[in-house]
Amino acid sequence: MKKRVLGILALAMAIMMLFAACSGSTSMTMGTGGSSGTYYAFGGVLGQYITNEAGIQTTVVSTDGSKANIQGIDAGDYQLATVQSDVMAYAWAGTSSFAEDGAVDSFRVVGGLYAEAVQLITMDPAIQSVADLAGKAVSIGAPGSGVYFNAIDVLGAAGLTEEDIDAQYQSFADSTEALIDGKIDAAFIVAGAPTPAITQLMTSADAYLVPIDGDIAKTCMDSCPYYTALAIPAGTYPGQDADVMTLTVKATMIVSADASEEDVYNLTAAIFDNIDAIKAEHGKGAELSIENATSGMTAPFHAGAAKYYAEKGVTVESK
Image (tube, rainbow, N blue to C red; front, side, top):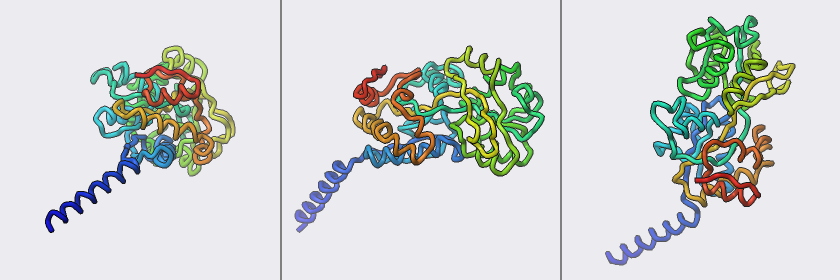
């Protein structure tokens, strides 16, 4: 009797293991950004397609952003993440926010996703340019974050340093609340436009975007190859009646170097074979393309992603 019971249990376990193998057992956690930012919202859409189309159960989590996501992949906490292209370059080279801890090579590129606008938002009518931030309370993101370095670059191009402002180190959501409460005068928010936090602010308050253009933009672009000029079209936000010039970096998806070639091929296909459907669910889907995915990357692609792009006629560097 005992042998019979053991035999039945063994058979049941074998069936369960076979079912798990057939149904796909790969799971990934995707690090994004704050819950009021574009990373989290768009990441949620991409996660659904990776789950449903690639068969990889994807859990999307809110994080502190690019640097935390790269560190999370390095620690094994995340297998996928969205990051700024400039922060990714710093990590791979071991410079700027990664200078102290050293280079990180535990991630690979899946592909570029969309433009991230460096947005300067205020409710103070006295602030009409970056130079007007002198002496003001300004949120510049968490220390070491992508937002932080973008803010420092823009301030520097205007002849200002971190010491010339009353620097506050806040998330997008906290910056929005602080602006409404009058605790800060302006905030840098780097994300795809329209950004939920800014939409919320401009819907409920008399807020506006400050241009980052002219010599300031040129200085940033001349000193850093990750910046390009961008016009945020009129009507992107409530009450925005004219285009607003600014700078942009690129939101990029990265993956653990330990992920299998098959899984990364499948998740890449899940995104770029379904651009029209993704576009219908989130506006940033309109910026997805093979060209955008494969251009301007400063770290190597995962072999699985490279295989997918090769089938589309594009050769990328992989490792």
